[in-house]
Length: 389
Ligand SMILES: *Cc1c(COP(=O)(O)O)cnc(C)c1O
Image 1 (tube, rainbow, N blue to C red):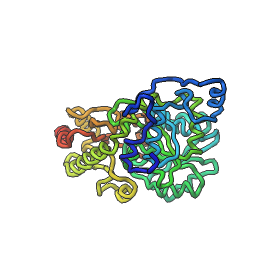
Image 2 (cartoon, rainbow, N blue to C red):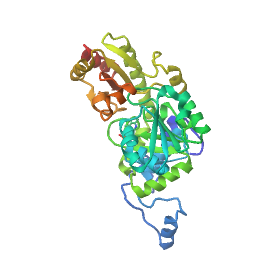
Image 3 (cartoon, helix red, strand yellow):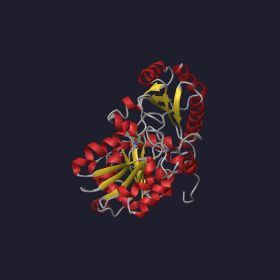
Image 4 (cartoon, rainbow, N blue to C red):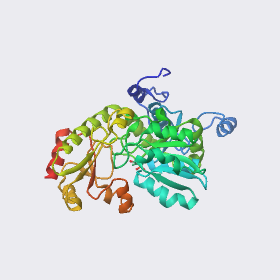
């Protein structure tokens, strides 16, 4: 398939060459290693004179198909697939950074990423500074000669704040820094950060990419040069995605566009309902006109995503009552699932942060995060409405 097709077509038609059995749907290659013809083949394969699979810690047909699809979706040259989103985040940083280097990160990042930067990287003398979303104008002041990377998510988890990717791209270019964007909340269907100047894009495949809450996965895609460094590190350290999970993910991507369209349609309807509800203090959703970064979201995203954040009036007590009254939706910590999920970030995903740290990224004790699923919207709104009463 040489001609570049539309997003949906690439997601469906990007596939491995057929095997001798001429299967229509890609088979599962559950094999840890691959065989050589003779001594010369073995030598040449290990010397990387041939582009072929050797061992599934390095590459596997199923992960290659998954990587090819995501590269086409994101407009990237190359990628590496990981066992989880956090394996992707950790390995990407660890492959690119040395002791003494400095990371400039948005303050509002996934809880485990925050913990990696603050609790673990300092052990190897990799330091960080956080910038606030509204401080992009003065971010230059935080850049030191040791700064190597700018890191951000948009939309953010769980606050669904929006960062201007074009501005970040310009700053990274000006200072010759690597811009890494965690694009998990948008999915490649809604936003392609490479267009705005990102060098690398990270996803937790666990979320919208799988879309049915079955497997953990992660992926990093970007320039050949940077991905090669990540590949060298990862083929030695072993965070590779399993062939089975890669196979599941690659199938899931075939339906990403239709699923995400419906997620977004449902999420916008729920956000509009909550905005008018008397027991709700505030609602945040990127495609609501009341969102402070609505214009930027419209510019860089196709739709608003599956996550709606809001605050129940009455603090912790009323918040608890709300969660205990939910009947249909799941109380869980995942997102991007076909089943709608309500989460309390302060006691779950972001519980490792101090109260001050949580408040600085907009998480109050009464904050609720809803990952809006694919059930009928009337049933989703109905359950939340009765729980608020
Ligand atoms: C879930 C998530 C991750 C981590 O992914 P896992 O697959 O759970 O390891 C990273 N970034 C964001 C924004 C996430 O939502």
